[in-house]
Amino acid sequence: QFRLVESGGGWVQPGGSLRLSCAASGFKLDDYVIGWFRQAPGKEREGVSCISRAGTWTDFPDSWGARFTISRDNAKTTVYMEMNRLKPEDTAVYYCAAAPYTSPKICPSPARTEQYDYWGQGTQVTVSS
Image (cartoon, rainbow, N blue to C red; front, side):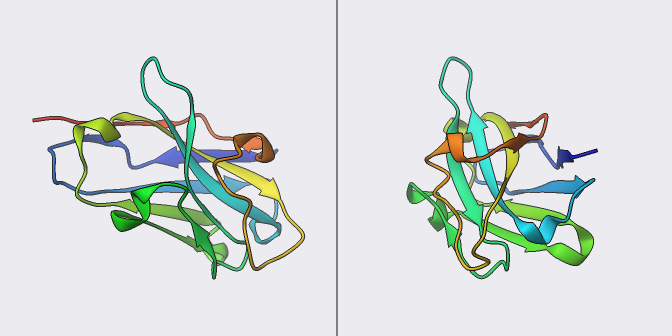
């Protein structure tokens, strides 16, 4: 059964850090690119980052790359997103999603959420003092 499970969310003060995990099961993670997305209350879902199958290419559609990093451990079938210097506007439900992709070297921009086929249930991140 194809499954993605996010974890690592929670409450953090502004300026703090969190590491989100996306655990994959039921499929071969090496064959899929992974993206991280978020949805704040009353807003549309937006793409935050993606990582190629080989883990050598990452993409951040906005300026998140200055504060966030994405990595993957295919042996552990887990993808991570480290978030630093968090701001209240980062408060959202964070999702990971997978897409099969031929090239191991790049990932489709997470700005195009429709390219990602399989989604986890999300993990809440709240940034407040």
